[in-house]
Image (cartoon, rainbow over all chains, first blue to last red; front, side, top):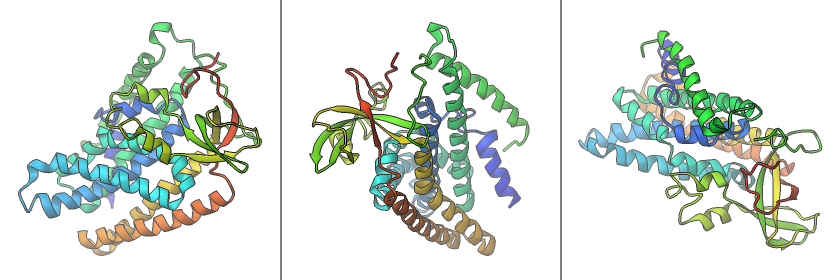
Length: 193
Length: 169
């Protein structure tokens, strides 16, 4: 159990998917203008990334490795992720059409989010088992969601600040993100994983 | 962005509303069928060609997101209006749709892993947990929909040229 906790802390904070690995920057800058949209996007990403990690582990273990088709890994993982996004869209629509109207907007964005592909590929690289793959996917996505929410809060405050015209918008956003990334470097002393 | 632009609308109970722009596409007895507009942020995205919100299936994607609101403001077909849903509802909806199935899956698989230490059993438990979570989410979402919590409300007519990310001064 302690190993799982260390794995999760490492994935969420020490090797944060956005601020340390620099994955998913497109949605990071795109949906962080308000906290509520950031949380909605973060939760959708957490669900899709966790389920994708599980399915890609099964695909890798039972199909790609036994048949020596490792060179098809990236292509097949992209297909699996697209399928999971479609499944999620269908499931949310089935659970409640009203819920789909409210939350469906975030789902197409996840298909083009590189962190959702990056984490399953890292799972393969680290030779994780089923449980480790799932928890690594979940914790990485939780770290992604945490950063989205924190950054959205910062941007809501920056929107009220008197920013010089040349720095207004994305430039001040990137400056803030780089300062946040520097702060997260502090976590690298906690664990080597 | 000005401080005026940062002022948010609130519903009668004082909760902040998340806004979007939608166009009236059909009128039924007392209800208006609305189609949401693609946000201006989508138009500038480099992945627009790959994204379901803007790709060749744009019309179909938007049609899938149509919703109804009460037509107590005498809306007409083609009019653009600003609609909103409370932040609290959006958060609750996110929890119901994603967190309940996800945590159900995690709890089931962690329990199975502690008990069996076998990848096959853990995977089966994860699938069962996900199914149970989706069922629970369905019940909870049904209760929210019955209370009308998931229905967006009319805020005001949109001004000419106004889009989702247009700041008003």
